Image (cartoon, rainbow, N blue to C red; front, side):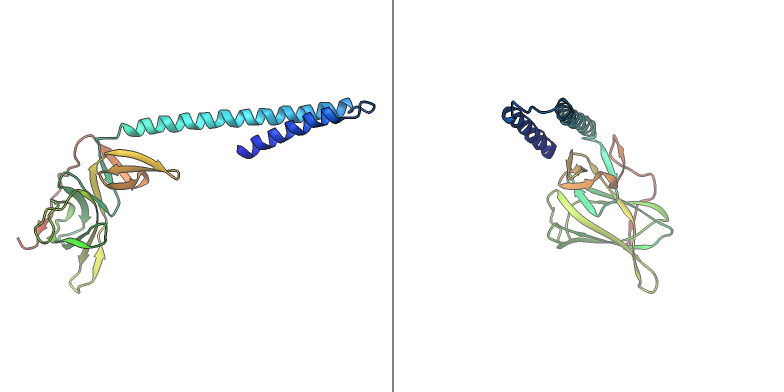
Length: 213
């Protein structure tokens, strides 16, 4: 757009200068003059078209952002390792084909391990809630943490377990052409969000139980 506007201004300057400095005894032919005027009109029209197109894009983006803001307060379910601790609670869901030993590890933004948990899953869907208490019994502040979940077989071989996290949407932002869903301090790419609900995410499936029970 800037380049086209610059060319338009340059063209106008050249045309005006040519008209001022042409030889009166040998004026520009009508064909040449008509051609240049046609070029002038074409450039002007293209500048106006681009301006209108940018206005339309801006209006569309504004409408999209307004629509996204209606998601604030909803509960988002996302496939991400970012775990939002909000109001002293963080929720995770995962599925196993059978009752299996599960190891959960949570790290803070600095990569320091703050919480580990060993569970025995139920066959099917499972949920696990972290109360924000670390391995030393300290209540950690709300924020964005990272979580990993693994299971192991009888030979001790470990395998990553796919999972989703859920959290309350506190905002929707965009940057570099990407829309992000904010869940407290956690910021998740909208493409990783599988669903939204008006109430806190819950599951009727069996919850994971402590392996020590």
